[in-house]
Image (cartoon, rainbow, N blue to C red; front, side, top):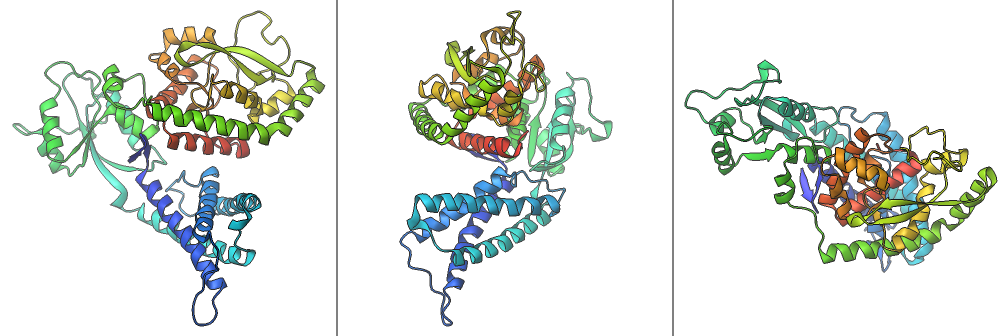
Length: 467
């Protein structure tokens, strides 16, 4: 895995993305050169912004492929139907984006004849790139051989995670090294034992491993081999904590096996002036742009709510924001009037009977969230961040869920890492799962992660994708 702006990105996906960007830009030049071939030499059209047009073309196609999930690769499927079914719509969506760009900036337009050639070269290049990558994935080139230190419940969970289907990174588990303080819960045939007088580094070298994952629940006492792990690290073997392994592989921070010291000393939690200023600037610009773009949709939504269930169109509700401050969130009303007659707050569920027909539609399309743009402009919320919860539920969750209050160290968001990865939740267990994504976002928040969340949000709204 690569770590870019504190976010873990698969080396496979990053390499494929980089290669396809180069292919798309190269296809642009190749298509333009062939279109203007005069019989003796390839001539590029005399455009002042030719390279800029090539980059915009590549960005439009990559965005479209990302929105359709083409970088969530399942290497076990190979080049089968799902890929072909996604490639053509990606190109079509890219064409729509380019049309909008050319309308707003006509000087970047490069002609239909070039576009046909460019699309042809791009399709052939991407098919070849995907074929090579998927062929390579069947070899040991992308495989990492690892040992898990530990043989208990935590080691078993880490081992199951390493071999789950659909992983971007392929692991070959050499085995598990048990420690005396744990009950063994992994298969006996996977246990590795140190020879008399042998060391952990000798075992690792004998098994040809490149990484040791420390998956021991209790590290107190003399049984934990801290000196031997240091020796392994000095010999070039990567030593990874179980919490970091979970963070890297699931883009979550698992609270059930988390040591508080890992959060304190593990890095992240960027609250610098530069990060806050950049995030606020993006929030204001994006909110104003979205407000203008969605105003007709918002007016139609308001009319539909009134026709079905009368006024009011909006509802405001107390939510907990940054540093625990309570504010009033604004949304389109999606439930019948007096949905909580008994005065006790209730979890909203997927098939909640209190939701109106219009409310069901605007919830699926996330239109009910649009009035929160005003909360963003007021500085109470951000575009991307943890979902704000009601004070009643926050009190319960603070008592029952470890580290829950950490999510209030940044502003809540209209959309967020947990929303696009997990969706709606209606229980404490769901809140725990969403918290693990929220903690990952709070710890690793960056402009890159915000962009990835917005792309996933687009996919969820337009294609009901996501998780």
